[in-house]
Image (tube, rainbow, N blue to C red; front, side, top):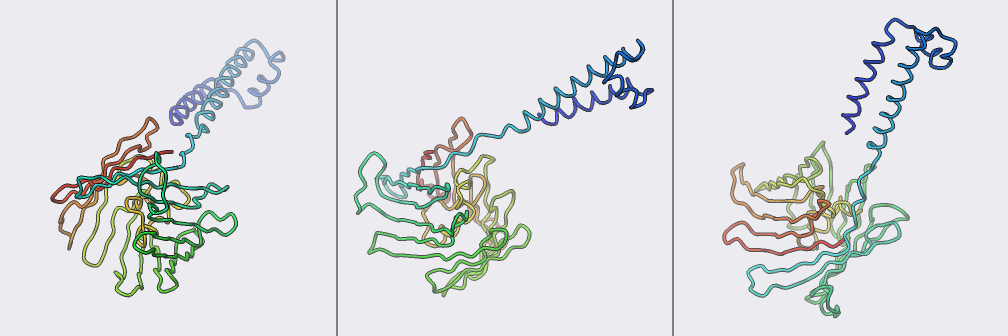
Length: 310
């Protein structure tokens, strides 16, 4: 629309120039301001000038109106409902609830068995994730994760950022750290944990981690062109921290601007197999409302079906 308005405006300016090619700016402005002082010839020019001026002004107003119309705000994800069914004839429902503070920052995430139509016994709580902030800072400085099953396991992440709000250090349980560095479209992670993977590289393209280069393999990812609402949460850009160390399965794609469609595994540059695949159903606003997540190697099993609620 903006381009169309500019083309119209360029045509109008060209016409104006052709009309006033032989008149000086002084004559034009005098005509526009005091047409009664001018001769009939100049009066005729003044009318043309004013006509074109009105058209130009109206065109600019229309362009400005269209240009400043902002899209509707991306609604916050309130709830994600899952049906897990890997290698099982008895699907297991579970749910993820997001809580927000007064700054619209994610305050906590609760994962539990069942769904929103039933009560939540304490024994059904699987994982809680709490986020802590300094003042009104957008990103958390501390993430505390607690798994309630199997006797309960806790995990903490103390995060440090650079001037561009990118993670540079993730101190885990005060025992070891993961360091992040950046080079153009590359994010290099260095895991210092005992038995850790060492270094790997994430390659970003158009806001998505399209490749992960590890020591013995590469993972290539394809994405759709739709908005990933999880990425618009304040924690979206750093969600891979949760995913890798105490993550909530199927949410780790939040660090991407779009929705992931497929993962392919390569070794020494040679394609090995398709690992994951996703199929989405979108609402009228183009936001995902349902996602079916598959294993794509043999046999092709559904990992889970996820429903978005805003």
